[in-house]
Image (cartoon, rainbow, N blue to C red; front, side, top):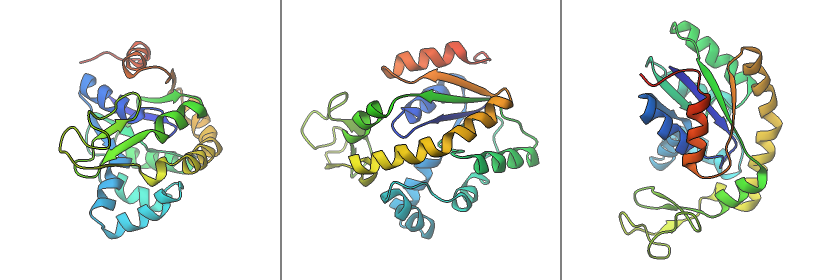
Length: 213
């Protein structure tokens, strides 16, 4: 099974990608995680990516494609965070064809902007191990301190309200063509992304046109 999980920043797609991957036995390919690792290592790619992430802008397609081509060698995978626009979708289709593969389903997590702002603006990340917390839904036991490694928590630049709003505008502007593209191919699967993660996951399982192997 080859799956794309799509949604706005803060829609919960990262969490759902992990859950889907574990349940269905799929390799999770997270573009965001790959980019953040590159930024953390201060590689040339990471430095280029950071400039766009800090401004709440999407990373250009040419940088994205350099990463994706190297990660699509498995028969069973879930893509998290890619493609994000029509050009990327077409490039992905060509890459899959060259590898003799075809996409099974494109899952879209639907959610409103206010929920996005609420989720992201209160997210905190550990400077040490990278663990994620939420000031309301999943706070650390001790204020501003990671439960796992004891390091300080911080707010990512792209989780600040003004940047979140910019990211939402960019997402809305570019997503409709992508949704239309996969709908015409009969691959689009819309799922309500509101509520807690277990409820969302249950909705996904009920709608997926396949069974756990």
